[in-house]
Image (cartoon, rainbow, N blue to C red; front, side, top):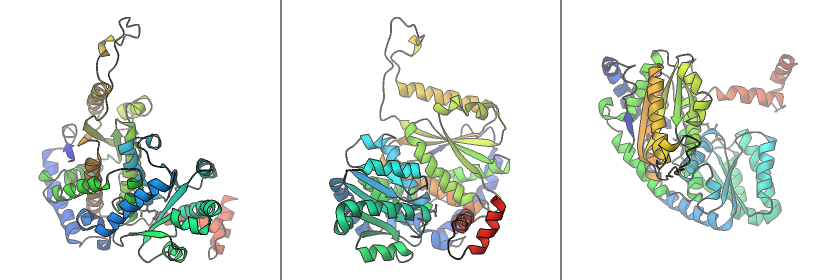
Length: 443
Ligand code: PA5
């Protein structure tokens, strides 16, 4: 289960501040639970671990098993909330080298950019191999995955024929809306449904995340069970008894004191993509109406040799949230060397995890001394169950944070701006006037 350690933030936040924000947090929690706050039709994720479609869940497991048997490469096509959760979960459990461990197909993520270089690389990795694709788009109309889908569908049809492609293309999309649902129906592809009331960045525990996660060989029963435990553990409206609400409260207090940047810190490389998932979750949910905490991330000790200097000594407008796994699942011992020419004799026989832990403890103290508040989020171990709990912990805290700062955490109107300019500049029908205006500006 997830626990919030407040020891390193208390020098920056008084008990009174926490007490004063308590009623606001409970009120936000009530709005969420009763569905009376902003975007009440987007709260499906809240009870998903208890209300998910069991038949579809079993279908996902069976399909994942089949995909593992029939392909060497599995390409997941999606952007934003339609890929980050799956990638975060897979790398968290199987590491950044996931394609080399644990059997099953290699998994690549496409359609989350418009880089020809990246796409060409993935196509090259598919050459001469058995490929399956899972295109994921709730709206069914997002440009980046739509382009990638055209390209990879073409590849599969070319190598396996139209009939063969039907066995190898899997579509995850909205129940009714968007071209993708219609197209999949026409082509006879296997489809999975993203519930109407679950938005992209809150959808990792739907088919959006679950199918790729299961294809990677992770135990999605455990993942859901962990989320289910968190749902019960964090149902309490009192922040003294609810660490997810307490985390939201502390972030809000720090923000009001000018701490406008949150740095999610991991001491493990496998946390990198989880940090990306967190950044999208909070950034798209909170960053609107000209306000919001800027979510960022660092992996220590790697980044202590780059941005660590800034955190220790730079502008004091940030706080850190450290993600800590209490029991290491892998360890190594530093070998003894009687010659001790490198001067590391004092580390001989110590485990790497212990050294990493000491680095974390030393850094926490140094950063607190340097004036940076630190929150610590702890899970017992790295497994699917704890990961499920962690996902739910952050989703709940994110929704509460949005309500606390008076924004709708479930929309993303700002994303349309770049799209409209891009469409106009590319000559999409209907954007002709805007095209001329933009071209004048960039000339
Ligand atoms: O969180 C969100 O809603 C977004 O990040 C979407 O997931 C992202 O824009 C992709 O949208 P779609 O799944 O409709 O292609």
